[in-house]
Image 1 (tube, rainbow, N blue to C red):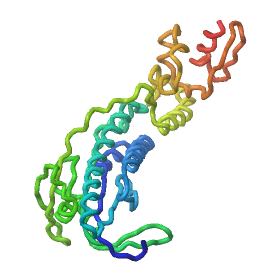
Image 2 (cartoon, rainbow, N blue to C red; image 1 turned 90 degrees about the vertical axis):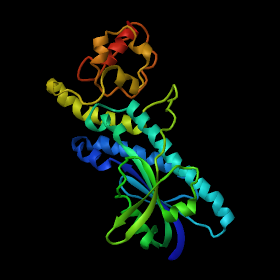
Image 3 (cartoon, rainbow, N blue to C red; image 1 turned 180 degrees about the vertical axis):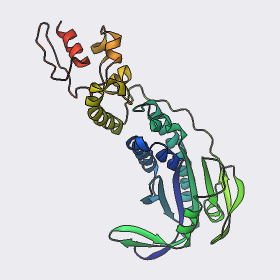
Image 4 (tube, rainbow, N blue to C red; image 1 turned 135 degrees about the vertical axis):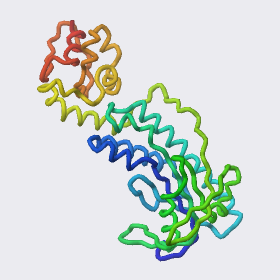
Length: 305
């Protein structure tokens, strides 16, 4: 689609509280970005045709769907778009719960994951679509209006805001809405319809649910970086998980830990050897090539007697 003016419905799914989340956790920037990355990925995974991505905008995704001239076809498409929009709230909330369950540590970023919310702005109008170096771009008043509406007078943190044109195009009559308006100096007054989504059903993790891979990667990287420093200066302490929480995240088997002193398990703060111990026979000699007699050494010693 090059240099074509089309009528489309535009969506911006925006993570509320992002700026405060990032700035209040500047020391924990890697964890903040890790959380936002997981949430954005989750939202993108839920986007289905005819809804398409224009671009990722930091804490938001900018989407569109072309409005077909066939009224009968559009009636079915519009219903799908409304369902897809509401599904974003469900997967977002469930992902927040999952991230909270598997949080890497107790830093400010990780303990404030559930403070993040989702808002979706929906506007309908014409725009010119064109390509620059293989990237889709668009111009016109509609993209300006929808971005301006991201800053509005709605006091809630989680909602869908339809402009009048979007509401008429999508006809989400099954959704309870509150009518209102937003006024801007340069674009005037825009009539709005705001829907406040109900809480989705509870998130029930599967019994074999594991932390996201990026959580494990971040954990290993940070333990590797900080382990030596804390070994020399124990008073610094670790800011990430230790003990049984860490052994669970690193897939240490229960039978490996059975019978070991609890204080040894709870003091565990290593990287966790990324290999299976394998079969060990009684009286075998085991060498733990590390900086001290750690948990892995105790596990191996228990297995060989």
